[in-house]
Length: 178
Image 1: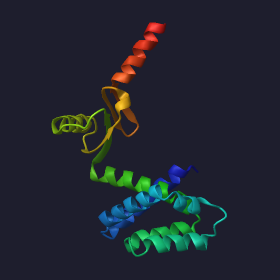
Image 2: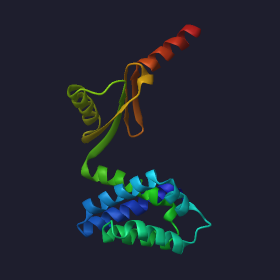
Image 3: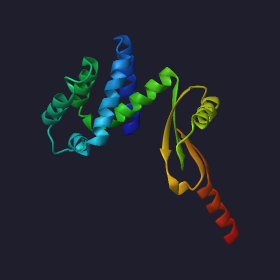
Image 4: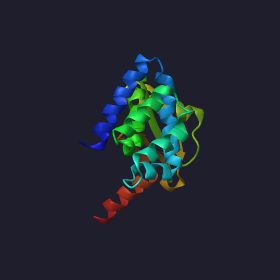
C-alpha cells in the first residue's frame, strides 16, 4: 500500500479520535508542531526513517521531543505508530491530518507568488478568486519572487494559475521560434 494511503488512514482515525475526545484543535496544533519540527530538523526524520535505528531509540526521541509539549492523545498516536513500525511516515501522517482538518473546517490553503508584496485590495481579490472556486474560507500564503518579472502565480492544492509575465514571454518565444 502506498505511503499516502496509509498516512491518510492514520490521519482520518486520529481526527475521529480527537473529535471524540474534544481535543481536535489541540491535536491540530500538535501536528503543526510536529511538521514544523520535522521540516526544520532534517536529522529527526532521518532518524525516524532509518532502518538502523532501533524502535526503542525512535520512541525515546519522540518522547524526549514531544511528550511534554503535545496533547496526550497526540502522544498516544506517536507511540502507537512507533509500535506499528510506521514512524517513518509520521511527517506524512501530520500532512494528511492537516489537510483533513482544513477540509473538515472548510479551510482552503492557497499560495500566490508575485514580484512585490500584495496590497490589501489585491489580497482580498485573490481570496475572493479562491473562495469562488472552492467555496471555502481561504488561508492565503504570499511569496515574493522577482524572477517571474510581473503578474502572479496562484496555486490551490494541485491546480495552478500562471499569469506571470515570464511565462507569457516564454510562450511568445516558443511561438516565434516555430
